[in-house]
Amino acid sequence: MDLKSKIILIAGPTASGKTKFSVQLAKKIKGEIINADSMQVYKELKILTSRPTAKDKKKIQHHLFGFKSVKDKFSTGEWLKLVYKKIEVIKKKNKTPILVGGTGLYFKALTEGFAEIPKIPFKFRYKLRQIQKKIGQKKFYRKLIKIDPSIKNRISETDIQRSLRAYEVKSYTKQSLIDWFKNTKSKFLEDDFLKIYIDFPREDLIKRISKRTSQMFEKGAVNEARRFLKLKVKKDNSSIKVIGISEIDEYLRKKTQKKDIIEKISIKTRQYAKRQSTWARGQMINWQKLKPKDLKKFLKKI
Image (cartoon, rainbow, N blue to C red; front, side, top):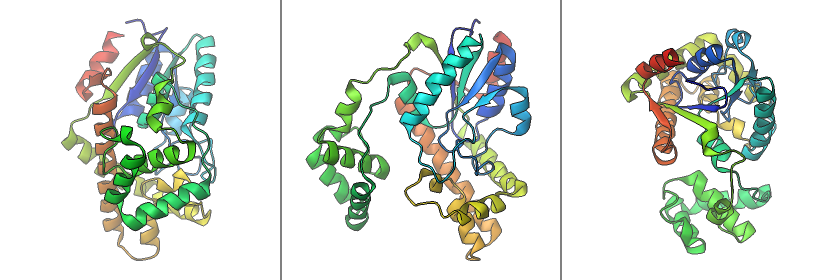
């Protein structure tokens, strides 16, 4: 199997073994790994975001991991510009770029293109969020459909984040989010990519998530969260959404016991993994879906 000319994409739910597989693959084909996880970009959050270890980085060159401050905002558009450059540099070295992560939007932007929507002021966005909280998601969604009917059946009624995004884009730009994305194109052709999605069985994944959450605490997740909380990151920064931050904050305030916090984080992570799997079913239709047992067979074929 000749993979030299390809840009390899490896996606999958959290805790599905993407990092391990990507390192094994990179060793076999002389590849370099590029981060495609929106939370692994933050340098202050290594444990809670399950960034590749120093051991992994010694084996293979890694890019775009732990290079942004949690105080900085970082968008999909910024990530895409950096990725274009990294892919070019890796290709010039006659190596294979391997993009690994769990952020579906990153992969979508790379393979389908990204709409350069004008930056919407924070005050405008904050006001909409206050309205959504006041009237509730059901009423807010109905308001959204009134101003932008094209969103119906494209965004779920229960999807708060995407509903807010669609509302703010339509309100501020006077153009639907759907229209913004209609004319976007990827810099690459479909044949440039080899797309792999690790389809981990649900029950096994739940066990892996519980085990990894416990290991995070053994590695120092509490101290990492404590240091993060001292930085007083603004609430509109995406780094504040890293799973484990708010739960450990509860623990530090002595509102909850440690074992209960570990369970809470495990549950929240399982819910996140389910959302990732739902995204994959709807958006990653033409990806190769590989079970864990298929990964070894795939590596042997190379």
